[in-house]
Length: 508
Image 1 (spheres, rainbow, N blue to C red):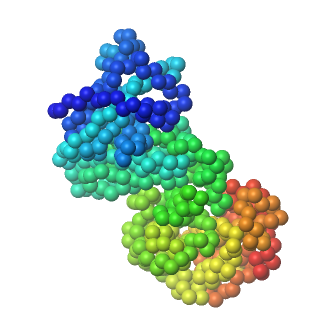
Image 2 (cartoon, rainbow, N blue to C red):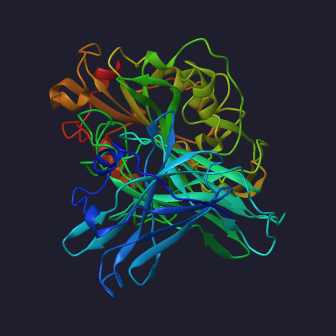
Image 3 (tube, rainbow, N blue to C red):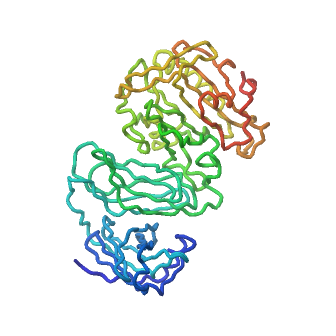
């Protein structure tokens, strides 16, 4: 084993202090310089202190570290659970990036605040990842990089040689509260990476890499990162919905464990320095079907990209509750909630709308076909998309339902998407919100109720609607739709006139 006595990197201590807890105090007089013993990508850290015997017992101590790439310091992660040895502390880092410089600090959380050592730098060697251990999943040390106001990239090495079915994923949540969200990654030994989007500015998150295998959940050590403060863009978290700046967003139902959520941003399209949102989905584990998809409609999302037909599982939603294939059945074909033609700005954006979580079974003979009941409504809605952004929530319903045309549908299970337990929706709806004029140049968040119009278009899932033109008989107030479905629509737009509508505003 090669021992490297890490040297102080001048000028970087201030950079670290600005990224951490505002209560952090330098306190460098209490620490000697950290020492690193490097063996490939495994590093043993130690640091002697000037604290008296017993002071560090039952105290939060550890190390914070970050990769240095192109002379820039990445996001710091804390290594908690470090061992206390008298007046010193020690910890082991595994699964680091090979041949990479890292900056490290020792810290101690005292009653008066957190104090830390001066910074030191070590460089890892070549990858020394051991052979996979078939006995149980094994993890390296998780780290975060590329942290901005709303984004971060997580990475962690993973060893496991078992070929049986298992899931690997990152879980993350605000450190102070909340439930875990998850991002599935591929199985097999190697470095796992996940890009997080839609995070809340100025928030500390904790995360870990996990593997579900043999009825148990195995996890890596926990690590943290902190998003930068919001300077006015990016959408905060001040309302009942997850992001207050998204007018179409439906609040998550935290009391319903059946619902799983994913917030998809456009991979290669940004607005005002932030990645544009593509769509948000609520997916049901019970029904194996989308509950609702919320999305903005604007011509900026349209371009010359071809339809990709890239059907596949949503990487954010639990894999086991989604369809297993793109096969059809039950007299239904694959019905997009947010249509492919509405996302043609780029191939990457179009691929996202082919996630199974954006697909519901729709009857192929008279509903999701040329002149079908749903296609007719979709085409009509296309004509209502205005220069100001139009906000849509496209949803499903699974109880017995009869619509304004007298068309009925009853609940049933069908074989669809490689499963035999998929609920066939009894009704589909489109909740729409926009400005009345359509070309005000104003955000709906800044409009009065008199400047806005919103309504729901509701059609039973019934082949008898083939050729049915859109009429006022299918209109429903947003408030009535909320009572029917239990969802809160346009919660971020307090002036949305949800209790009333005027058919003539919509040309009916």
